[in-house]
Length: 269
Image 1: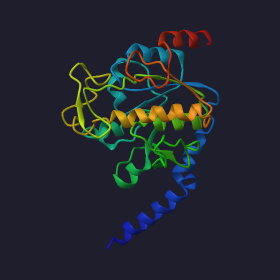
Image 2: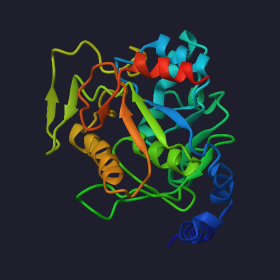
Image 3: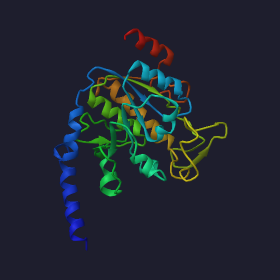
Image 4: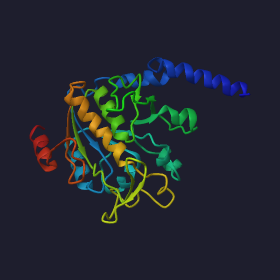
């Protein structure tokens, strides 16, 4: 039998889950609605193609950006900081819980399941509710981040939905190489690519403790970008999304040269 106090907590969580937009966490998210209406943003992956000088350029241009997970490993190399930080895989925090909790970032978005079921609480974080997609063709796309967020095997998909809710209508993706030394294929089998020198922007990104915890499934991750493209082309969302990654294997979205993007943004300042 469940302990009486735990039972009350579970019942309260269930009530909030059913009406998340009206609970304390959902109400805190409402402040972000259309705060960047019609604006451009960068959505930044952690691939090895990501250059510190490009992040510094984004900082100097003053363009809002979203970044994820252990991106803070390179904070000592650049004045850039993500405007909005998002994470959703609890394994990211393994072994660095206190460092993670002390991140000096104004806007940190985390799944409420961390707080409810993992007993992992971040001071001043904004908590969102995730749901599974209802279709196999493409992941669903939530236009109401306050109510729910469609989960996907890459946190970038959560950022797409958050950015849309905030009113951003042009996304430039950088640092999405979509290639790893060790990854999983469509069937979950381990695939090793000995030709790659590194997986991430920094050698500090992962260590021996996390090697077995963070093994990306490339097929499922790529499905997230395919889903974004699907919703754009089917006019479910009015967004432009471009892949400005320097190289890499992501070919779903239209390519843009990052230096040209910088020049264009600079000319509009």
